[in-house]
Structure formats: C-alpha cells, structure tokens
Amino acid sequence: MKASTNTVVSFEYTLRVDGEVVDQGQLAYLHGQNQIIEGLEEAIEGREAGEAFAVTVGPEKAYGERNPDSVQVVPLSAFPDDAIVAPGEQFYAEDAAGNPMPLTVVGVDGEQVTVDFNHPLAGKTLEFDVKIREVREATPEELAHGHVHDPDSPAH
Ligand SMILES: [Zn+2]
Image (tube, helix red, strand yellow):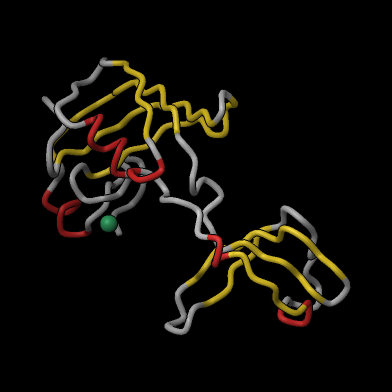
C-alpha cells in the first residue's frame, strides 16, 4: 500500500541540521492531515513499507523563517518564582487566546530577560533520512479522532 490521504504511515527518521543530528526516532501519523511538516509529508506521499530515502526540506516547508520581531525583552517577574531563568531554558507563555506559546531564553540582564518565540528550527534547512516501516488504512475510529491509535494502548 502506498502512503496517501488517510493512510497511517509509520517511519523511522534521523534529522540533521547543518550536518549535526538533532533528532532521531520513529513516528506514526495520519497522512494528509498536516500532522508532520509539509516538506516531509510531500516526500512520503506514494511511498511504501521498506522504502528508505533522504530528503532536504527548506524552512518554507518546515518551521518557517525566523521572525526578528519574535525576539522580545520581558521582565524577570513574568516568570514563576521558582523558575531557573537562564539562556537555553524553554518556557511556555500564553497568547491572548490562552494558547501555549513556547519560548526560549536567550539572555538575562538583571531584571530583563530576552526571549525568542521563534521555533528552535525556524529558518533551518532540515535533512531527513527516512525509512518507511508500515503503511496501512486508518481505522474508522482513527479517522473520527483525527489521530493514530496505538494497538497496545486502550481506546480513547
Ligand atoms: Zn483517539
């Protein structure tokens, strides 16, 4: 079976940025539902179990370009009292609608903290090595829920 809309695709991957491995693992997702980055989903379209390939995905089909306006200075008092506020630490702020917005601390100067709301992989070209493990039809329940079910876990 070939990967197409509403099939469940399981794959192993290694992700490199600038030649360094930044992530590695395996994933199962519902194809055609924007559950993985666009450039990777396009590369998997039509693939079958056992296929292995490499794909390079530019920022426009991955996490987008970096937005310089997303680097902001906020007061230290905006963080929880027990938080360790240091460069590289990640926190979640909330936008006006209450949605979580991940941020990374880039600098601390006294009571002023410089934070970056850009995704850590924004502006990056991603190099994936992919191996397709399985392609199967999604079950009606998976389609209704909009996500893949693990056969070893109870239904939810
Ligand atoms: Zn479910």
